[in-house]
Image 1 (tube, helix red, strand yellow):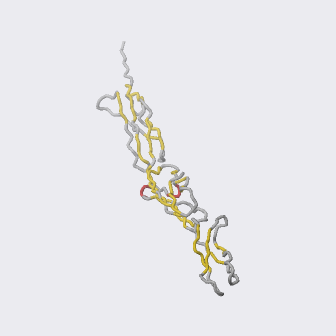
Image 2 (cartoon, rainbow, N blue to C red; image 1 turned 45 degrees about the vertical axis):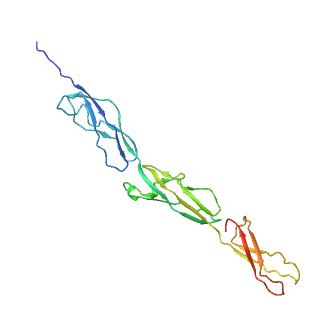
Length: 231
């Protein structure tokens, strides 16, 4: 009788290669290594990856590199490969901020030092969560503004931060001496005063004096010193 033979598919082993790009960069070309192919032949089809452009990890798929498209081969994948989109770098700078002693802190602001770092149509307003912070203290002086809890929501990482200063300026107050009098020959009374724009909780040490003289007449009262760290 007639003898019949059969040719079966040959096993080929595909090893997809992991890929990494930075968010906003051009798409990397997907590639793989193959074992078991007949010399001079190539596989039909190409790899693909899960869709998405946000930073993260995506599976690389055999896609249409299938047995159906390669009739002589049995396609076997040796491993799962991944396409990783890394976060892009951002450079942020604190903006110097001031207030007057006794006022509430204003919001600490910042800017991007290089707007070209933004990708696609991303805007600064949508990038960040958290806020900057400053060194503790409420007396007039200079305090360092630091990164605090500020971070990017997604797709970016703050890799450079330039500090600046939060300045608390001294508070202006008005000191008004209260008129006083005495009888010729008496000791001078204690001179008193009123203030405007002073915080109620603050204690000031203000020394007053009057122009020299003991004859009957009018003498100007003025202050010699104000002891305070806040004005």
